[in-house]
Image 1 (cartoon, rainbow, N blue to C red):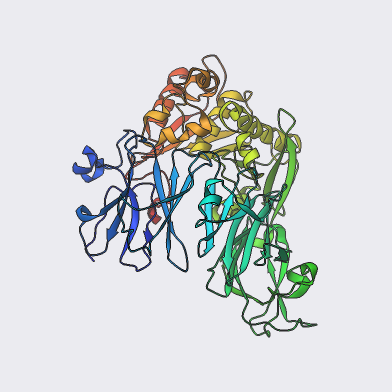
Image 2: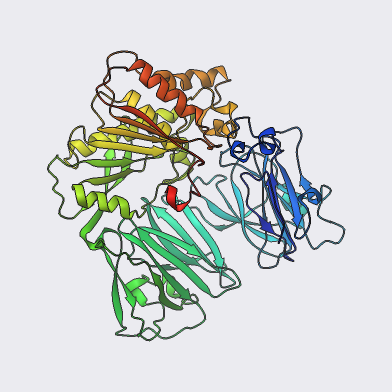
Amino acid sequence: MDDEIKYVKFSSIVWSPNDEGFFYQRYPARASHSEAVDAAGTEIEEDKFAKLYYHKLGTSQDDDILVMKDDEHPNYMWGTQVTSPDGRYLILYVSRDTARQNLLWVTDLEDPSNPIGLDMKWVKLINDWEASYSVLANDGPRFYIKTNKDAPNYRVMTIDISNEERVKNQAFIPFIDEDPKAPIEQIKPINQDTWAVVYSRDVKDELYLYNKQGKQVKRLAADHIGVLSISGRRDFHRLFVTASGFTNPGVVYYYDFEHKVDYPHEPGFVAVTHTDGMETPMPRADAEPVGALGEKLLGTTLDGDKAQDGDWKMWQATKLNGLSLDEFKAEQVKYKSKDGTTVPMFIVSHKDAKRDGTAPAIQYGYGGFSISISPFFSASILTVLKAYGGVLAVPNIRGGAEYGETWHLAGTRENKVNVFDDFIAATQYLVDNKYAGPGKVIINGGSNGGLLVAACVNRAPEHTFGAAIAEVGVLDYLRFPQFTIGKAWTSDYGDPSNPEDFDFMYPISPYHNVDKGNKVLPPTLLLTADHDDRVVPLHSFKHIAELQYRKPTNPHPLLIRIDVKSGHGAGKSTEKR
């Protein structure tokens, strides 16, 4: 196939129901695109005037059909979805920044009077910037929609889009209510009328099944502590679940709804070790199918409803040679931030590590854009912990979504200082409670996390950190909207062109607040890439220049590493990882 699609950015491809083509977003061509190959990706001009196109396979990109544009709103971005399995409706998501707010429009692909193009007829289901809305499934014109409207932890509502009066009045019907203490992380319709829902409760995932009435009927994998990631289709009878964590590289199970058997009294089990060294019983490969595995794995069936009973089996387990995972442990602690807010933190260490206040620590953070930092597996980090007797600390600071949209907003705009205070308090907790030695905590973060690291170096007392590694960070807090996609971040950071926002942004900008006195800075390493067109490398270039100018005699090194022919981080070749 000779098809070549250019100028695509911040886009997925969504196939049309007949698989003859796909929808995608692209930006206008730039001068750098026609220059040497190495120039593409080094531009800094603002990304604007995105357009939505339909590409038919076997044709030139010049013949692609324009579906959506908006010349009056240069920052609008377009995302699409085709309802499955019926393939009848095209969903259009309109966003303008990184806020959890979007417009949601729907059009009927089966309507012969509605050909793909600029004149498509849209039902503008959501046409106000007030909340996040995403379509989960549909029964004909009845749509199931996940939203944080009046529900910061998210809930599911339904609406009949063929009923003009209900659409006009936004007359949604509740389906799955919000859990006020656990935000919805994932939700998928499976096995026709069953819903699988993953909640995050204190940053630990819980998986439940709901029936077609939106009633919770069963909890799955109740003994697992860590991350649960689900996949499946509404027209398929298996739910796939990946269980992982700091000490578990990943075990994939499937839950089969088609083969129902009675609960056995003595099933065959094999122990699978998960996060924190906890063992979850799973059926042996040679064992008979076990229906739902009863309370031993799945927890109790709620209200006696067994409609979702099925077989639960291991599909695949990730094996790791050279590292014994049962040598490590993970725990969750909670500490107080500067303003008294309780913040959770995971601490990972080798079981033989001594908690005597001498260990080195790696502290990782992000704290922004409603992105949760869930337990993750890293063989390289575990190897370091074993070799040096250190700890990994991951504080779930404000700005993320660990406790829903409320937690996110508590770390944005004028509240951004809470993020830095949370992170600094985490370091102090590690030292005060002898998990790490004074001056032995290395802080690390990337992108928004790079901003976090650099800001904390500026704000924390001298000798708080042993070292700081800021990767592809947003370091010029006053000019970021001028470069590529930076303007989209103003929803989280504020808009420096607004005088009221400027007043709370200037005091925390890393570049503008490098110490001008005698403060000793920790060993600092900035990492960036010459083709990063998200957080352009000029942030790191300016910041390292300012650091070295202000601190020519700093006793610790202030360095930068510039990766070539690389971008913001994702998609690096194996030799660059």
